[in-house]
Amino acid sequence: METKKINLMGFFTLTAAMLMSADEYPAFAQSGLLSVLYLIFAGIIWFLPVALCSAELATIDGNEDGGVFTWVKNILGSRFGFMAVFFQWLQITVNFITMIYFIIGAISYVFNWPELNDNPIIKWIAFLVIYWGMTFWQLGGVGKTEKLVNVSFYSGIVFPSIVLLILGLVYFFSAGHVQFDTNVSSNLATLKQNFSLDTIVPYVLAFTGIEASASYINNLERPKRNYPIALLTLVVFAILIDSLGGLSVAAVVPVKDLTLNQGVIQAVSQMFNDTIPFLGWGVYIIGLLMAFGMIGEISSWIIGPVKSLFVTAEDGILPRYFMQVNKKNVPVRLIFLQGGIVTIISGVLTVIFGGDNNAYQMAMALTVMLYLVTYVLIFTAYLKQINQKDKVHRDFVIPGGKMGQYGIASIGLLSSIIVFYSTFIPNQHITGIKSGTYTMIMVIFFAVIVIITELTYEIGSRVPDVGGYNWTVKRSDINKIQKSIYPKGRVQHDIKLIEKDVEKKESQVNNFIDNHESR
Image (cartoon, rainbow, N blue to C red; front, side, top):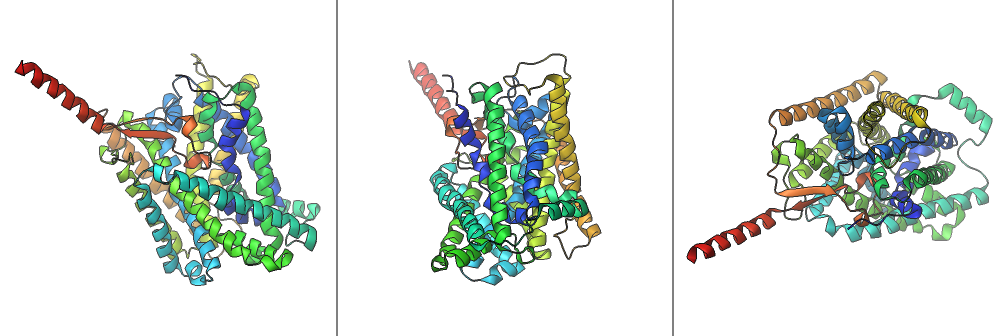
């Protein structure tokens, strides 16, 4: 039966979870009024090209079910296809760090336990308890967390974000002053004198993940018309909400006092005290709700991206040892591998680098660095397929003919390369780490990841192991997608254990043979 098409509003709601990212507001607040300009800049030169090119790649015949791996593999080959999906997964492992730092910061503030956030050893122990607690919870299957995620999204992400924005507006109109420079001319002068490429990193991070939603375009009514409209609407809303969120934090918390993982709680507390002091206790409720919201989001992210790696099984790339699932359709061994990576990187950033603003900034830069490798490959694949003589049918084509296709993809590729380069440069807010040391750390990290990726591919491709798995994998049904999960954390592929079905069929065949022989 053909899947029912979704309308423009239905498609927009599938991507709307991208609009709620309160944990990133403190990073925006560091730039004050200029954050609005940076968001507009990132939205136009990066987000739109990613979304448009991904949409066209997703609708090419033969690309419907494999995601990023299939898009890139079918044009650049399986090596680069594997690299694209592998880096897409790896960035999640680093992104967990900033998300859990946010939870720790909220709990530390609510319970007035500064050591939890300031003592590296205690902070890392808390990090591991939260992460591994969510991991073991997820081993029981994603069905256990569906209700949790829906409740946590609305109560712990949407509601606190709305409260922050409302309090920010009330504060602005009642207090009449803010902690950031509101003069446009002086901001432009600051931009001219002090702008550096690394400043744009958190703004790119805010827009990552749209390629996951681009895959749903196959289910969209009138995609050539509705998709660009949905994109422009999403960008406008995202810029508006992120700008208000970042400026709300910047309005009440001076940059010198801003803690990236506690900045939102700091802002809410100050706003309550200055606008409705008799409700000052409300900050503790908001803090707990935000921690709950992030815990729900993490629980949904643990399995989703891992399952995307299973599409590489047809090419026999990942070692067969990792391509196993339990009775709840959970890829247990890959989940534990992911946990090991998270544990090591979080230990380095928290214990060695202190788990402070510097570590938070580095985690954001590492996340963007890894993800941009995937985007560079997406743009490269897109540009190559434009020149293919045999044009395969696709439901969506970037408007503007060849000039529009080349122009948009080239802008996206160039901006991705530039921002990727900037992740190796410490921004102005990172202190206590020498520039050379920072760059060396980032280079070593990236080199190690590339080597691991290449070794994995070489081992897998030299000993191909196609078929014979005890599960099937297919693109998730759009009607079962949880809209409350950020697109890049969703379960893009469903895995179904078929071992029981096989055993049942074998039993039926054996019974038939026995009965036949007895006659």
